[in-house]
Image 1 (cartoon, rainbow, N blue to C red):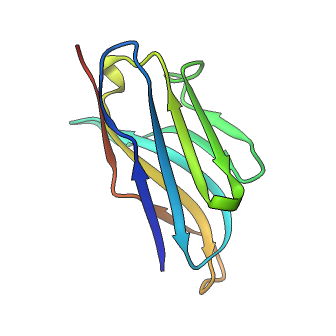
Image 2: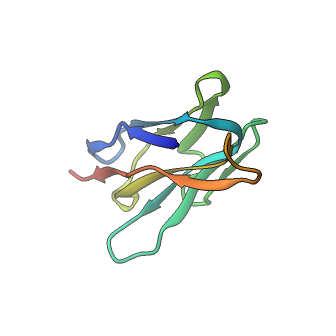
Image 3: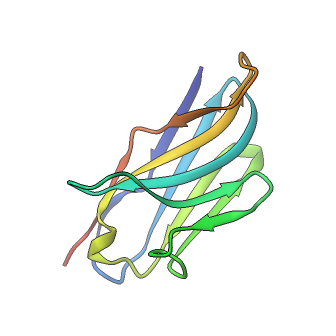
Length: 121
């Protein structure tokens, strides 16, 4: 069993900051990539940022220079530091991990339950 637990969402004014956290726990053999996706009302889920367990990062153009993704290997944890938040960043943010479970022979995708981020004055 693999569990993904997110935290850190909330309501913030435009220009403010939030930090999201996500922990992958359970019977994990190897983590390949962890990342954050978001889904605004009426829109498709979109990539925000990903990080490989070797430290390679990838960002959506809309968040470059404002968001920073980082990870702590030993804790199977990924963070998303979000600065200079805009109303258009409002969405449910989902944590994703592509990993090989102890019971498996290939990678699978696991998702967290989602955390709401609202940017409004």
